[in-house]
Image (cartoon, rainbow, N blue to C red; front, side):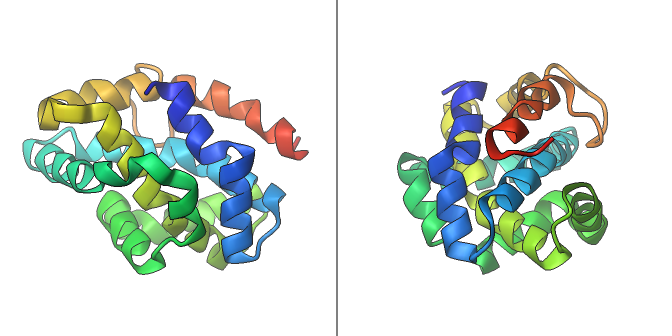
Length: 176
């Protein structure tokens, strides 16, 4: 699975529709939030993976979720928001409310909606990354996340190559 497959699994029409239906939100809103959130999610994971303990913890989480990568749409239709929120807490730590607020402002979606969308995609993102990382464990995380972010080693505000790919996705749902 490469970057295109990971992005497609979370940003494709079926995924957006599943989240929209599950959370009773407009598909344009869901697409806008996911497009804005993926660089932050991956950037925060990359930052966490920059320490030995952070990389080990993230590798374990990816491994724990990898087995559910086979049926992402089904997972998105019935996401456990409690699990998703725990994942977000681990990824963003004390910055979670600031991240949600920033994505809310940039996407025009209320903070509660942003929070629920992020909690919906977090387990599936871990599953997809876990499948991609395979048996590489903590050692492979830095290069996997760096590749997804376009080789960026900057903080979570940097979208790298991911930003340019995600930028075109908004047009699929009428976002300018």
